[in-house]
Length: 490
Image (cartoon, rainbow, N blue to C red; front, side):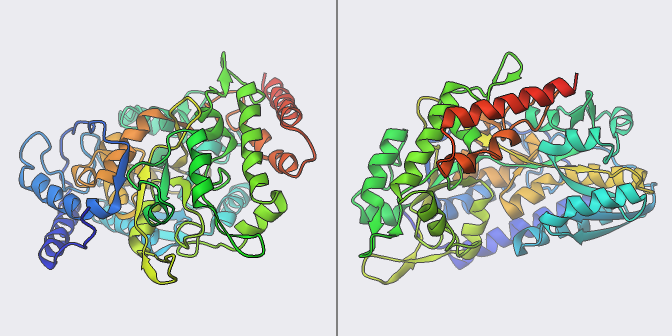
């Protein structure tokens, strides 16, 4: 396995490809459709991907005049919306992307759209995730101070639409032939309220298993054979767990609470979460899943001890995986950008620092291969004085989702952008795009009468972990609350 960084020559080529992509993006070139990638092997390694990805990207750019004309262009393949460059105005764009990677990524898109929409002045404004929606709701209620474009949580968008917080965009969509076909179907569905759109999908994600090859080698496990089943997970964890002299853990092999929610756990255990169009929160498969989750926290000393273990971590690079304290966890595909950015060092068995050698694979399951996807849309808050200009900015951002994907490694909601050839040159990216074929919505499938029905389970799981209620009682109570909310909507 080649784990060396690219040579200076390859670095130069990669840099030139990147610069070329930005130049093409600014010119507004729009490549034609690209085919979805073929199914890839279940495991991909960051070590071997780096040089190969750069080489493949160069080949893709060289053959760009073929079926995928201009694959390095920043605009989206086969799904670019025509912009009305005569529209003018000022657009305040609120987002919560404050990290170095994401702040630069959104600024790049704003810069491109500023060129493509010369009569619109775009200002990007960072708002902390905990404040952005509260501030927007307050501004809409007051009738002033709201942004013109906001990054909206797609799972909650139908509810904000029902609450008259966001603008109905269907008239714009109908006029400009925006019908949702460019996006992953579930992402478009989540923007609808009464079958009319309140936002254009911008970002989604897909969850995969990340595992440390360093830890695998140290534990005597084959680093090219990650676990595939829940039973194998437990067997691997037995070998990967490391205890301190006082009985606490210096490293744990795995715990589903690092990245797997009850909804994804249910999918992996064969539950559909919705039956005959109605939420089925107390499905016996989900009951079984919650009990399996608790088995893991009990394994590591009970809920209190497990929470204490989790409490020692913060954000990257001091998170559970980059610190070397958790050998396997589940995270979104965008986590790869952080691993690539920080290039973490961990201590080996001899106490010496070495580079974290990581890889990704399918999430181990209990009979059903699955993953889950969440994400965001770009919406226009009710009361915006610049809605026409805001709509053009939203379309432009959607046209440039491949730029977002390249910078952040977050999955574009636009399918053609996700299949950008420069991104597909990385085997890890190809793997995550392939995983979208079996991904399911975070929080459960869409239910018109109660789109965010999964919140009723979320708010009760802590009581279950603390032993205040068993799994069946917990989920029965959630189901009753869900049915009561659905009844209110009728």
